[in-house]
Length: 384
Length: 134
View: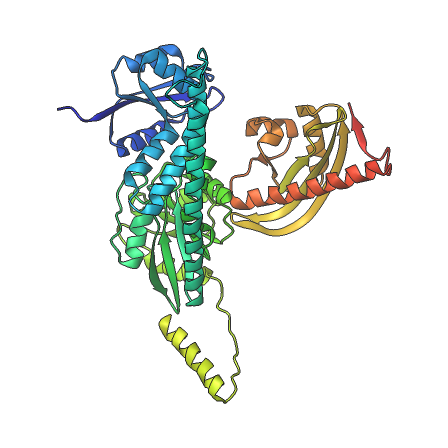
């Protein structure tokens, strides 16, 4: 029985831009991560085709390989998706849709499932509206029909989105209270951020001696995990979060707001970068991370962590570091897999954390004063 | 670096009342380290084509040292090397958080500057003081 999913990857390269083989490689990685067997990669350098995104001939060439789906790297408009499905009788999805497919297959917690559903609905709402109106161009809906009107379907989606947003708002508020409580207990909050598959979960496991799933594939982590780490005389809570990707659409960032709040509200962000990437890709990924942090509204100080140093020569590592100096000055060089440079990283975290505040408390030598002293001692011992 | 932002790239009564703000600052990847100088240049123009925009940016950054930084949209998404050759200065689009914050600062300054220009115009003050271009 054949149950393997197959796909052909299509990529339209902008004639004004240089070639981007890494983008096709990234799309392949995503497709394989979603469980597709890639039959072929087809790219074309041309302006955007209004009907099919790529030229009709290229799409026909992809369809001739009989894949289950066509996966476009470029975003497809609702009209283009409708035209491809109608003309070639094949399912066509774009990169965002593929990312959502991966998210849907990895979401395990209630929060992650809601976030993925919200992202799906935000993405699909305009498609539903356009495709339904295109299908009903020649029809005149009447009150005697048994089906519903296209507007009602769109409204249903909008209603569901509002419900999910309300639920996620509650999750966000719980998260906010939890972070506040953790700060009261004397913990600093440190978050791991970075491009997908940069090694954030591996680093998290190394620093916390945990065993969260860490694989060599994009988007292994969706829901945040937090554990305590001791650094010199400080203790901080380290949170592993979802990875970033280039051209992350705003609706996806909005849908994952409660997860990304762990980064936005942190006292320090560790921006993990895969140093084994080719120099141009490395710079592009780093810039893309900065863009996403900007879109999230992150104001926390950033420590750049160049991971996977074991995969490159020391001279090459220094050369690459020079190339990204303006985006990642004074970075920490580590290998999360081999455990190199972790001591230095922990020292750097302790150094960059906001300084501790000192308070002098005067208590009266009375029963009430002793009660206050007892409460202070209790809260201090709880936080140890 | 010199972050530039232009406010007022939309027609009001058939003309464009623009203010360009330039912020010369020392920028780190995470934020603005120190703001050195700020300059606001108003311009009333009949169009908002590339020539006008470049002229306004040139006026605005004159004498301020450093790489010029502006949003892609402000320069019609032109490639960096083309902007550099037209402007005759080192130029780049924002990449880091710090560079984006500098442009945000310039945006606030240009927006506030334009509001002031509009108010002065409404009150009939400073007529003739605004540089006009075809």
